Length: 212
Image (cartoon, rainbow, N blue to C red; front, side, top):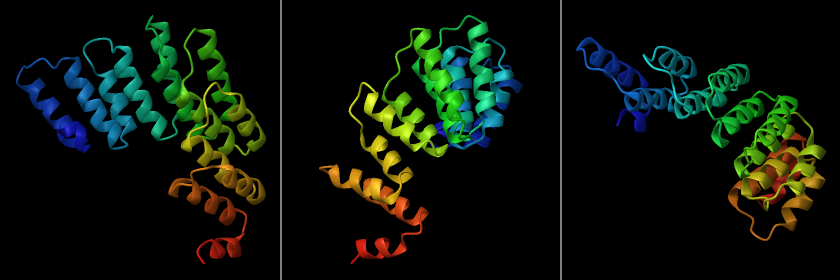
């Protein structure tokens, strides 16, 4: 319950109570506390809990802590955790790399995100749709819109709503409108992305026209 509701303080209290009573917490207990911290945006606490575990964290725990760092844009910490896990001989998986790339995306570090994408492929881990969407978002946030469009065109998946929303919101209004009009299904998310492009570029009259 604590994990689902993000009640990280209560989760940590329960963990401490277990320890005080001499009850040995297993990996599942620690994972639940870490996820509670992650869901509440407490990335430092998630790292602290993992580092205080009486056993070596597995890749699933590392991924959860990295995801917590990613949400806060703490790319340096996320990459540090990934490198440490690799040095310990853990087999990194899609979620490991996705968390690191997402952290770089939040921090507008597209060059590092692309380096991680290359490293992912070199280590035999297949990028998935989440990977590409994070990399495209990293390029868009770093104002490398042309590169973002090229990656979307070259990825081995059809662009989904997340991809399209990212491209529309980061493009100039004319390009954004062209992309928006080319889509058969125009969802609320896509319309909001178009509005975002207009407002970021001072096209307030066009925004008003859309609501007439």
